[in-house]
Length: 401
Image 1 (cartoon, rainbow, N blue to C red):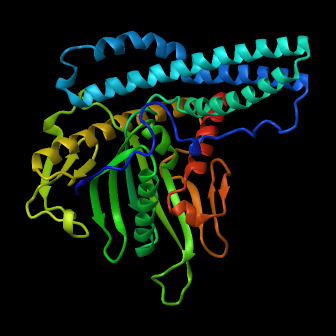
Image 2 (image 1 turned 90 degrees about the horizontal axis):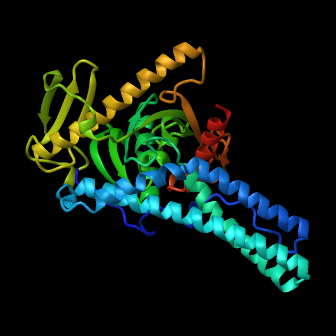
Image 3 (image 1 turned 180 degrees about the vertical axis):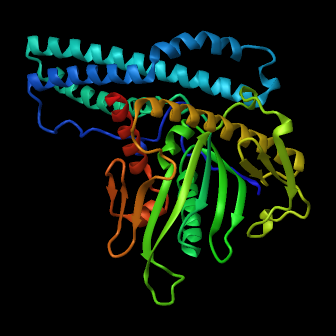
């Protein structure tokens, strides 16, 4: 299958679309009392300090020198993927640090202006302070969303797999509906994606699909989708128009540098086959698709996105490296869990979200209790609320831990 790139509606770098930002309520339209203004300044300082901690600004500042040295290397663009990663990370760190620094200075300035205005009884300056506090609150909300991405791999590209589960043809149709939901979301975002593997359903929908998603905090964004998704609806495949339940599994792992993972070629079984799909770009007339089996672990990856067998093999090796890295992380987590005793259930295989179309309409995330009544909007790709609620829940879990 050919690569599919999504348009960029927002500028690249660290910035996020305003529509996706979780905002606190705006300041009241009535004139605020002096005590309220002082409290607002204190609240902004506290929130900024929390954001600074989760963003690890000190760590980013210490990393800048190394990134700038790499970015100025004369042979930087000999490896274009590495060059893009370095320059993107550099721009992201510089942008975040600048935003934090600017906000710190602005909050201090507005604090000084507030005290002067109160001393002089200058109502015009007090109104200016209130307007500036409103502006700073909006700017800080953007930074706070950035601070939700604190995971080690949040900034990595994401490898997403969707697999039909229990429910027969309804499950395969449900898997395709999820694929549509995510691609609609991606088409409106600044991210891009490509389809690595695609397997059609026997009657309708798909059995499985694998995507690689690239962009700012791609893995951090889509980590929220890992788990089992449940659909309840009147089945279009049931002549008696009965209500059916279908399941689909979504797995999301971060892409890793293949050089970081040791893979013994003696452990691999490599098969080639003819790509299949809905026709057109999905059909190859040669056996260019590649399937790699890692025999010690039983992990199987496939790629049919590229035109040549060599390109598909290289891409499949990248997918294998990511899955081996994820298995190593899961094994380590299992060891820790065994020492700690019973904890939360593992994410994969756990029902995380219900989508109910009949007898009522609602999407509910079972981890965060976040609910949306507009299920059609969600299925059309409006999942910002679900993603943000997960990120906030994850950060709260981190605080508790």
